[in-house]
Length: 346
Image (tube, rainbow, N blue to C red; front, side, top):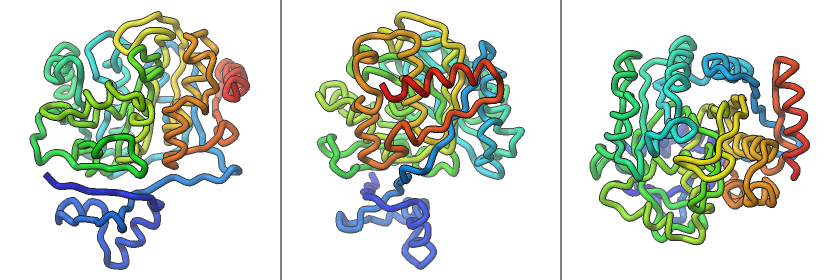
């Protein structure tokens, strides 16, 4: 099993170092390059108070419209000529928002192909249901075949299919193992749901979606995570392993209590997209507050939620609500975004 330890530098500095003869991230994996603790490095996303990160918002009850418009509003194309891995929310096979809706997944793949993406893969690891059972129940293999897309079951990667990650100030006993396809991917899309989490996570959106990249089969990481009082900080730390090129949140339906498999449902009829996991989750929490949720959501400030605050400490994205710019292109979405902007500070 190869082991890699990463500390903090910017993504730009990381590749500059590679250019002057150290080594690039992907080649370090291929050559089994080992970093000492003194040399720990991994990209961070530092943002000044003046910088704003865009989160596109679309009010709709149609998933095709939500996917397409939320991506288009960002006016970016990180997919062109890239191999793309889509990481859905497949922890179980329960109906959306218990898991990613097949229509959302399908439309993301179609849109990425239209934007010039090359090879496209779907990759995930489930739990408590087995991954193979979830994929079978949700007809994902059929969907992948229909769209000429590879399906990667992270449970089937074997011992050499994972990379060890130890974040700085880690609350994990000895780091954790992350699926190598995530580490090696040129471009990652995280597509998540909008919901609360009754088993200690409090909420599960883009940061929590990353739990599915950690090895479960034959390893104690999930027992460690679910048995720790630092669960929410540990969830944030998993995200230190990689940076998505895009996050798409399907919020047509939401769990405002219970979750992640079943819970109290409300219709939010909204899609979000962006490149910053903290910003996406912050706006998602504002939506839950606007809908009316449980005490853990309603009685705690958004940036005081432990998933958010630990992600801020790790410099995984923005640091405050002032840095979020919600972008919309229609009156209904714009009026809704004004409500959320006020809620973001509560």
